[in-house]
Length: 106
Length: 257
Image (tube, rainbow over all chains, first blue to last red; front, top):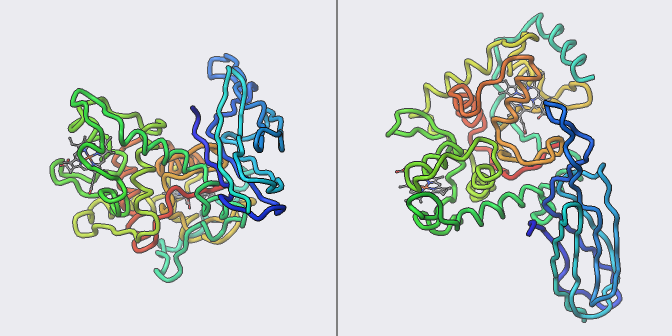
């Protein structure tokens, strides 16, 4: 699976706004490039990113070819309860990666 | 834009290059200091620094058995955090067995061929960059320690290249990174050209790259012919740049625009 770096607080106060930062290893090949012999380089990008918090979707993003390699996505959400935040990236050629972080809300 | 600007620089510099004034030690600084707050933050936070993706790859490779010897780097060197601490800060190093200077990527390839009995990893390949980044990471924040006594002929050869005009623009490295450091080249502030961050993640490349790749970029900008990866000229330039940056802390994997 592709490597990802996640920065999320392990603990948070109930009701506080928390930031989750994600970085995933991906070439994000635009599909607009050609090789030296004129062959089109097929598009290979991450197309979707979804974050769920104890199963409930809290953030979703759609990605396009103009986004740089190794996309960095950060978002905010409300710390409601202890549990798991799941991050999922999907894309061209069946690309799929999932990461989970545990959060304790007190 | 950049091309035009380089031409103008070439013309104005062609007039005089003050016999390559070396930068006083107290005035040296990494181009980290010239970067935007956002780019610095990206370098500073491990979970936001894309270079760390290569360090993680390197950690996995470090544990992977390879070659006819079927032994991993870890099989001989153990934990990289202890065995590789400070190593990158003194490369290129003098290799007594080969009687020449060798850079870190070259040294890793020697372990590949001689100790693991596996083929060399290609320069700039993801695996070689990942292993180099892992080893370099263990010197993060440590001062560069150039083995001046044994590297002297290589440092001198590097300085000779650094101060010699070459290419269609008739520029020397020193024109930009010594004589005109801190001035603007189009929108870019010309840095002092220190090797402290390599291998590093360059946003323009959208990937991690070696110091030699950076030097290749500079040579192309000068419209000079780049050397082949691993060429003695690059090793000499690296030895000179590391000596020139002696005492400065290593920042690999750094981030640059």
